[in-house]
Structures are given as C-alpha cells and as structure tokens.
Amino acid sequence: MNLKEQFGDIDIYLFDQLLKGRITTGMRILDAGCGSGRNLIYLLRNGYDVYAVDRSEEAIDAVQRLAMKIAPDWSNERTRVEAVDKMSFDDHYFDFIISNAVLHFAENEAHFQQIVHELWRVLKPDGLMFVRLASSIGIETKVKPLGDERYKLPDGSIRFLVDEEKLQKTTEELKGILFEPIKTVNVAGQRCMSTWCVRKSM
Image (cartoon, rainbow, N blue to C red; front, side, top):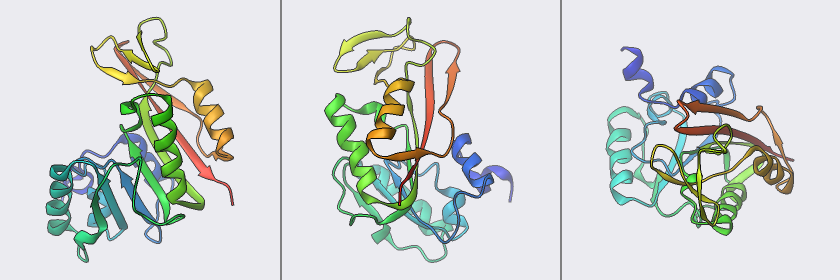
C-alpha cells in the first residue's frame, strides 16, 4: 500500500496531530462537516472509533461507501446527515473533534458562535478540538468587508473570517486551552487558512 492509499488527502496539520500522538485508537473521534471523508481514510483503515456528520446526504453516502470498503467493523450508524450547528449527539460524547474548512461558512457572528458552542458541547472534558478555517491574518488589507464578518477574498471566494484576537478571545470564553500555537498559512496572498487547536478544561 502506498502513502496515498494509506492517508488519502488528509489535511497536513491534522496529519501533524497524528504524528504527535494526539489522536489515538482509544478515542471517540468526530469529523464535523466531513465532506466526502478526505480526513478519515487513515483513521478508518486503522480501526479508529470514527463518527462523521455533514448536512449533505451525498457527502454522508460517500463516507459510508468509503468506510464499508476499508473499515473492518464499520456501521453506518456512525454517520448522520445533520448540520454541525445542531447535532443530535449527547453532551461530552467525543474525545477529539475535527472541524476542517467548516467554520468559515458561518453566516454571521451569531452563527459562528452557535457552531463553536455546539462542537464544544459534544466534546468531553480534557478533549481536543482541531479547527482549520479561513482567516484575515496576513491579508487584512486585501479582503473586502461585506458585513456580518463576511469578506470577499482576493481569490474571489466569500468567507466568514476570523483574526488571532477573535480566536484568542473565543478560547478564553470557552475556558479552553490552546494545545498548539495558532498557525496561519498564506497562499500567495489570495487566502489564508489558520489552525486553531483547543483543549477543553476538566
């Protein structure tokens, strides 16, 4: 099996969490806004306790088909078609939550906070939340405000954008602890993606 087959198109910063031993087989893991499952291939193939949520039925169907091919003990009950701002999981259900390229689709500040607090609700105390989202960090003068914290980026996309101050403030409001420094990748001045990694206090 080559590396592509083993890891798929996993986000490089999520892969970094695997390398650092922060995601283990004893954890219950949620990919919230999973899309077609690009970040789940290695986890499914290696017997991790994985759950996936997406508002798109087509995306969930793709994850189910993928999982049935590569996961030895897979059950489709681990997937749900629902929005990440209102999930049906119990409180404190997951040890590790993946939110990759989801939060920048928030409609406004209230919606952003609703999604964040819903992710936080289903996270166990001492659990870890891994978030990748678009930000204005490094391209502050190149984005065009459209209202409600949404901006037009140089690449033409429209996103809800955060900055470092917002991420730090939200971490404090959650009474969370950063387990990684906030990191931002500037893609040729066209868009920026930040990594926000928060541990839930006991």
